[in-house]
Image 1 (tube, rainbow, N blue to C red):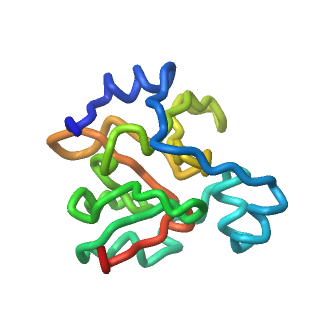
Image 2: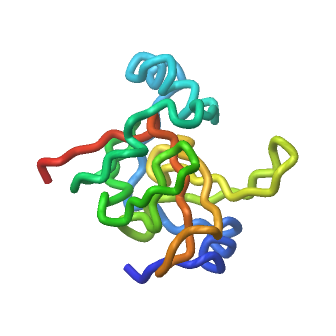
Length: 150
């Protein structure tokens, strides 16, 4: 996978990549599988409080999966300290695992990121990250689960 840049993100916001597969469940099924907080964030497009997770300050090797469908999304080698209060990454692990959507809520113009496999709300991507991508994937920790045994 080539490292994405802001122009790629803007293109994808109008023409999302094809997902590697699809996972679809009813709202009731998602509610039974997730904690109330995870359901709020991932299925109702909520946002956890800034600095509410210790995931922001941990940088050990590992992989980050979607909390809803277990799709591999990020590798810790692309994680960085953004001081934003949410776990931040410079790039996803592969093309097609994230979908991008223009988001004009809260009086802001942003790009929302969702899991392209199950449509879980993950967070937003911004053009103020470090090299090489210049991107900051600002993710809700509740939308992610980390594994270290892969």
